[in-house]
Length: 172
Image (cartoon, rainbow, N blue to C red; front, side, top):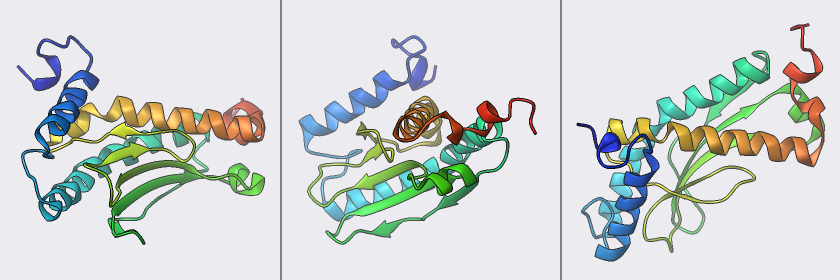
């Protein structure tokens, strides 16, 4: 039985939260203690998460932006404060013309953080304790929630005309 289906029904966020809380309790991140080891784990996490981040952004592009979007990924980068970050973004013509940020899925491990987190351009923090492909796949719901919330907040910053499927319902 998979980790996401044991004792948690169909809610894959509960095992992720459990890993998060256990790491806080134990002072570890996926069983490792040093910053260097945690960063190595995070680098592996970024690789695992990439295909799912692209999938979620592609779903929004095809479902709401009529294929007009451009998906970009930063790869793993060192931040000015010595942390690590990786981002996947979805931009499209209406968003760029409105001058708002793209939909963003950001995995980050800030220098002062105990372990990594996920966030969007306009939405907050989720714990990121991913060490296997199965755990990365279980984050699709979280990635979808972040991307959907980002799109909602971007529309809220401007208006519904950011979404081609709404302004061109016949695909034209």
